[in-house]
Amino acid sequence: VPADAIPKEWAVGFTPVVQAPRLAAALGLRRLMLKDDGRNPTASFKDRASSVAVALAVAEGAKAISCASTGNAASSLAGYAAMAGLPAFIFVPANAPEPKLAQLLLYGAKVFCVQGTYDEAYCLSRAACERFGWYNRNCAINPYLVEGKKTAGLEIAEQCADDVPDWVAVGVGDGCTIAGVWKGLRQMHEIGLLERLPRMLGVQAAGVAPIEEAFRTGRPPGEVKGDTLADSINVPVPRNWRKAVAAVRESGGTFVTATDEEILAAMRQTGTLAGVLAEPAAAASVAGLVAGRAKEIVGPDETALAMITGSALKDTRNAIRAGGAPTRIGPSLDEVERVVRVGV
Ligand SMILES: *Cc1c(COP(=O)(O)O)cnc(C)c1O
Image (cartoon, helix red, strand yellow):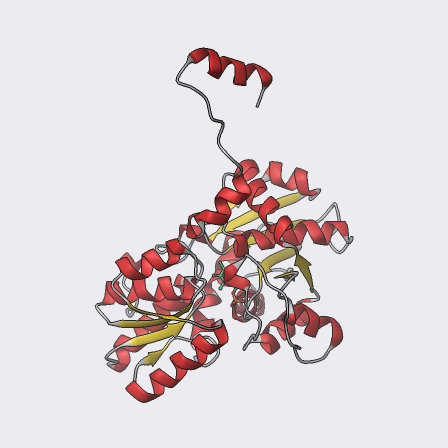
């Protein structure tokens, strides 16, 4: 990607690393940091890849750009396409959360809501790119996207050079994200800017964990029968599983799973104890650290960084499920006082 291909005002990346001492104490970790990628322009980590894709599409003179996505890759691509003035054709499965759909529509993308699975939406997007000559922003096929995703690893190295975390936890769906973060970290180590490398903790949803299974068994991913509310990591047929398994293995790390209940609890804890809003797939990284502590994979004296890959506002339905109901009262100060006294 030419250095000037990505205008400054696209403002992608260099998201803050938030210290989370109260969340660390709750999890039983010596130190915990959250890299809040929900603060990217379209509110997810995917901006790192979409900005690269749109820059390349413009450089190639493409007439349009396309992807299939459960939500964030799509809303992010639509955002950057709108910034660049490029038409975007997006294939989403029928179950994408409403806020992500809202972003697509406001950014002016042509949205095909495919009445089928994510995998069917993906195959359709690829075929349409071939037939109509659109630029293909699908991680399964486009080798440049990982170069965008690796910038998170470059930044972690830069932001945490003084105190490299023992673990970096990432929610895993297709597998491209964790492989990208690892690539960035490894390259910073190779050029001597990072003293030592963290171990990668890949976190999948318990209901949809084909890559965790592949890592554990050493066999290719099998058929997935379960489900998860964490839509961004609900990928039953991952295309980048080899890259994810190789990255985690090379780092000396491992995979864990988290149930939907554990993911919802992590969303609430991350908001309440650290002031960071995480969508389900993003809070999976925190839930994975909880699982890692419970299984003694992660020790009490260790430090960790959790990638918060998307904002909770990306999925308000589950955010409200995780957060709980507001307290209903009549418009009277006595009622307020009664509630405050009971300490609810
Ligand atoms: C895409 C995504 C992931 C997982 O990335 P993969 O490359 O599919 O493994 C995790 N969290 C969020 C919020 C995402 O959008």
